[in-house]
Amino acid sequence: MFTTTITPNQQGIPLDLFAAIEDLKKELNAVILAHYYQDPDIQDIADFIGDSLQLARAAANTNADVIVFAGVHFMAETAKILNPDKLVLLPDLDAGCSLADSCPPEEFAAFKAAHPNHLVVSYINCSAEIKAMSDIICTSSNAVKIVEQIPKDQPIIFAPDRNLGRYVMEQTGRDLVLWQGSCIVHETFSEKKIVQLKITHPEAEAIAHPECETSVLRHASFIGSTAALLNYCQKSPSQEFIVATEPGIIHQMQKLAPHKHFIPAPPENNCNCNECPFMRLNTLEKLYLAMKNRSPEITMSEDIRVAALRPIQRMLEMSV
Ligand code: 13P
Ligand code: SF4
Image (cartoon, rainbow, N blue to C red; front, side):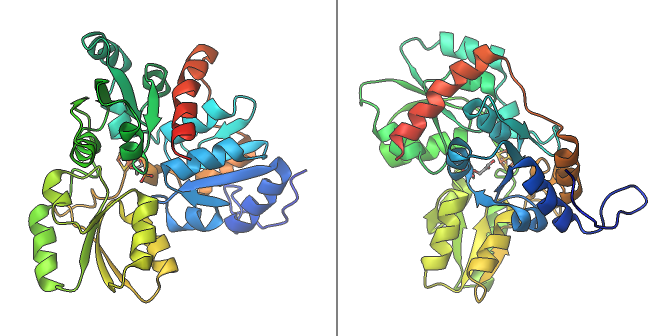
């Protein structure tokens, strides 16, 4: 039973969305999982906030009947692959990912066929179809650890992110066959502007996500997933950071280290292209409506789901 008594506006949307969402959470026995790149309001109402690996683990372990995924499509799809019997909602079905889109299944199947005997390690930022063609999934927080566990004489295809792939090659000394995909957000940062910021803020530490290009990574004193970056800036004695990843993460950085100063790494152009346009499609209002209408829901064919589950489970086993 919908229990809220909160006053709606003329469109029937409650004025206090926070209270209305809390009511719906109880009514549906729902859990809200949110990525660090979501709007601050969404992060604040979420039951769990994390990076891609933490969110996949949270989805694998939840007892809720409904998973409301405040993130992008491939993340909600991963939650559905792990929970075929649960209702998985994504506030905006158009919340995709340029990196996932840079790896179309038919072209990837041909690429794979051209490299027989290669093991396929795919970054979780890909579609269920690509996962179904993969041997092991990884995220930015466990990619190095996973590749290190594969026998040295085993050739590997790494898809779809060429930047993360190149970073893994440097860290492991392995030669990987890279699919040439990339993230529009992490390729937008300006090396020149980061260097200028380091000159005007000599005490600031630059930290970066491994989806960034080498020209940005070489200026970073720490490289890691969103969760690793968050953890690092709390522990580091530095008081100021230049953050080369989507600036949504700064909400948590500021909450967990309120006395420190976080500067978003600037994009090449005078635009806000360092904000992920897909992540930002989700709003508190759409989240409320998704819960109220039990839609839009993530669905997929059972064949693809079963094939995509195996490499995700291998990842979870290999990154305990
Ligand atoms: P992580 O959550 O693994 O840090 O990845 C960032 C990202 O781009 C998600 O789309
Ligand atoms: Fe995809 Fe990049 Fe957005 Fe992450 S930040 S969801 S990789 S487009």
